[in-house]
Amino acid sequence: MQFGLFSVGDVTPDPTTGREPTEHERIKAMVRIARKAEEVGLDVFATGEHHNPPFVPSSPTTMLGYIAAQTERLILSTSTTLITTNDPVKIAEDFAMLQHLADGRVDLMMGRGNTGPVYPWFGKDIRQGIPLAVENYALLHRLWREDVVDWQGRFRTPLQGFTSTPRPLDGVPPFVWHGSIRSPEIAEQAAYYGDGFFANNIFWPKGHFQRLIELYRQRYEHYGHGTPEQAIVGLGGQVFMRKNSQDAIKEFRPYFDNAPVYGHGPSLEDFTTETPLTVGSPQQVIERTLEFREYFGDYQRQLFLMDHAGLPLKTVLEQLDLLGEEVVPVLRKEFAALRAPGVPDAPTHASLKAAKELVTS
Amino acid sequence: MRIAVVTAGLSTPSSTRVLADELAAATRRQLAGDNAVDIDVIELREHAHALVDNLLTGFPNAALRQAIEQVDTADGVIVVTPIFTASYSALFKAFFDVLDKDALVGMPVLIGATGGSERHSLALDHALRPLFGYLRAMVVPTGVYAASADFGARGGDTAGLANRIDRAAGEFAALLKAGLRKPVEDPYADVVPFAALLG
Image 1 (cartoon, each protein chain N blue to C red):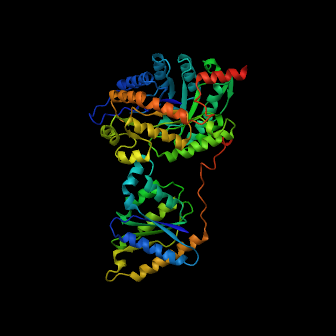
Image 2: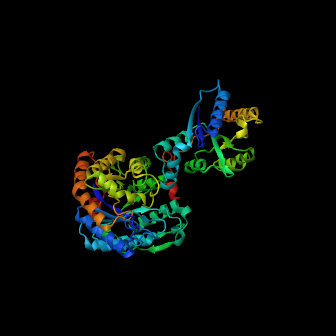
Image 3: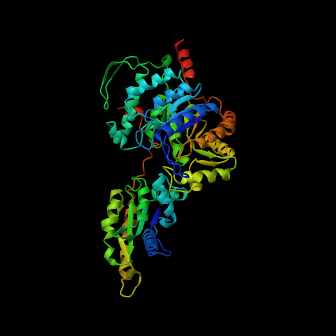
């Protein structure tokens, strides 16, 4: 099982001091957080992609390439890469380049993006979100698997005898996850290709994601990739911890009350009851995270949102110490003990390369 | 047969709730003999904070989720709002803002409203009827408006109100008995195969 972080990359004022980090500080903080993830023994760092303030990560492969140079083991990923508004040709090229530079430590998560104004900035129409995700990914999938592509579709200019360069490292395309909050079409897409499915599992009640994941698992089997239990599932989560749970609640409350998305709405208590947000002791985080398995089945990747809502870098790094020292080692052991036989790990470059060699030999 | 009653009165007891109960009772009388009738009353006041939270977070809390499910799965819905500032109250509208846009398609709906004066009675036809028209509900022809005078004040017309309630309930019962509402499609159960999405 893989554990890691996913960052939205928001620039939010610290509500306890009113201080807002500069974009430069926030970008450097994200890099520091990614390095810390590796230092404390996590497996994955994923960055969001946004093209509007107050978010900084507009150029994920630039950031991930820089992080790749400063890390040894960490898998670099996205949460999410906008398959609707990016040109699939450029995604194919950018991530293949990153894959070479990072010696294969790369996968990515496709998402549609739900910010209406962004679509026209890139010449697209949000009403075509699903058809764009379907067509663009179909092209991306081919560009990584076929050396020469002839292609024609609805949304971009045709390609004649086109070769996306560089070719994927070792001829193995990066593993792809598809993230969705509500669309059965995206669960169907992930199942069709035998790709992973990621439910962000934050900000919403878990029942909401249960049906999407159940659909993905059934359709994964329908398309012949394995049993429903073998489908590749990733989940998000959001936590804030202190040794003493009352200290965690007291410290996190002003960040919760003023946060983007849920701030000025429900109480911290109501929101932690209704959604997977956990604010408390490391032991409470362990118990709550283990419950995810009971709702969603055995899964392969757990990402935590830790650097949200204006939390200062120092606090985030302390949180990562707790995560790496007290939470993840226990979760690794517990999840491994509970996992049903035959359930695979999340694919990595090494495992996909080995599988490819097995087929060709 | 299950009927959901959505009432947006603010005080306790409220004249809005009184009208809602009378509409429900008249409907029960009209259906007597044909069907057992279960009635779920949803007092929106109890969900006021949860409705605003739902607007902000995009999801209902457990209690509001149960109320929404009672409406989604009902055979018919009675809705009653006080008229504030020429229209339905914000609390009333908030509930229908968080319902799925297809939740009321083909749903028999009986509309009612209350106000201090008869002068606001056309709000039923100018405000409530278009709202439920947009949601493609089947709104019965008679809407029931009750002003303070209708509840027994001197010179009021209590018999007239009772007659209107009976007429509306009769129309509502006829729609319910016709059973025209189709079950809502489940997008997770009836997934579009990917080959169709690829085109």
